[in-house]
Length: 482
Image (cartoon, rainbow, N blue to C red; front, side, top):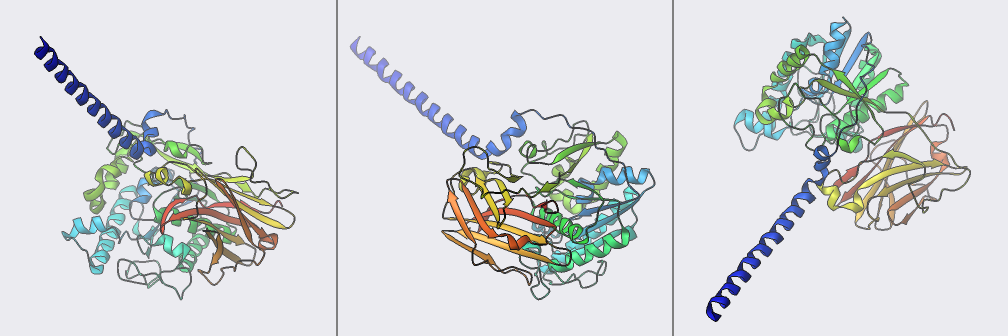
């Protein structure tokens, strides 16, 4: 009895130990999965808000602006079809030729390390694909403007490579557009020239509607294209109907599969950041035509066909962003006060990527701006406390009737500086200062920076070890009412 009982006790303890190990592994793996998929779980665990139907009525001249070949179909396909159906004029601007997509080049040419020549060949293929796709909708080749800027480099042109004496070199090995089909032959790869091309097209075509990328798109070519378009429209004081579309946001849209019976809904993370989303219904025939157009992009179908097919749904999505006016105060703002960040002008999604979940000190929740009698204050709020190892930036453009100034403020480890990226970059004012309290950081600048200005184009971002963690949308703030 004693031997049997002792043996039973040992076996029971071994079984208990196995169950404890199993339970520990289950909790540990569950925690890891939750951590890495938390930014995306809300897409499955929360219900969508009902969206209104788009108040979209095609104007006489619609301009679709796409960062890469295929974006005009993914985000603007429904608009193109409906405008053409009403016999309205449609033009398409393709900013890059998509000639820097390494996976597509590897697949298309069966090589592991594509050369600059092969990247240019990829650009030629994607140009041909765009012509075929647009022809399937009814847009003729002479109504497509290929600007030929470097794929993967539009953010660099926006931030650093702005002037004509500081050109960007693309993966295609060029500093000037190398293609015979581009809008401006031998166009220099710099931000100033992007704006020059957009100005010319807008002033010549005089669009009644412009459809272009969402500022919250996570692809750097997309948000930068948005910035270039908004910058150009503001510089020209050009007024038209503006619509935006989203393509890249985490693993959105779900599922990555062809499902024309399913609705396309905006990412949950962007439901409360300010944009107003609209449904643009597609008939079954329109969805089929969109799918056929996307099929023309064979170099892309080969590497991300399921992702492209996920945009063929019962509807397209388009959005609008409300206008913002610069808040004013008779007193110096108190950014230490409890509650929400005062004078907030930009909301930003939090914990929406794995990096931001892990780097809460760099995860921006919102940006504030306020004008007092003598000063301009800019502030940001992060999910966790401000940290000395994080580089925080306020970047803005000041629009006046006859000039545009820019400032790129960087704050890290107790130091504030202004980077000079272009000829119109402003130096750091002598009386500029910044303060930190918990998860809030604010900068005090002289009001003279915005004297005589009509608008302020603003965003904030954060870097850890030279890698960007977060970036808010660029938002235009009206100064005319001050």
